[in-house]
Image (cartoon, rainbow, N blue to C red):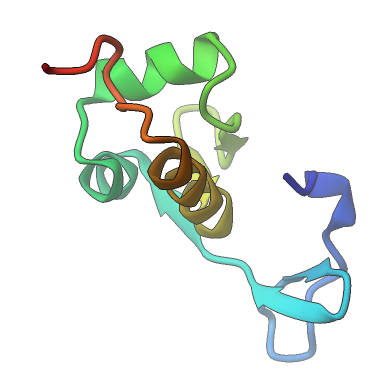
Length: 93
């Protein structure tokens, strides 16, 4: 997984981009409600996954606001789909 240190300065249009080798990824920050909707999980589950290192750490936007980089969430979901892991802990059998 890429790290935030790979981020370049904002482009002239004001939209930051991340470099993944030869491709450029436009950065989009999702606030917590949108992150929960994208993952299909609760706020507490998101915080738990961040705490145990399962989910990438959020970006602090202000004193009381955080956001997640959408491309990191997309990579997280792709990895989960490949491995078959469930998001919420124990799988349903």
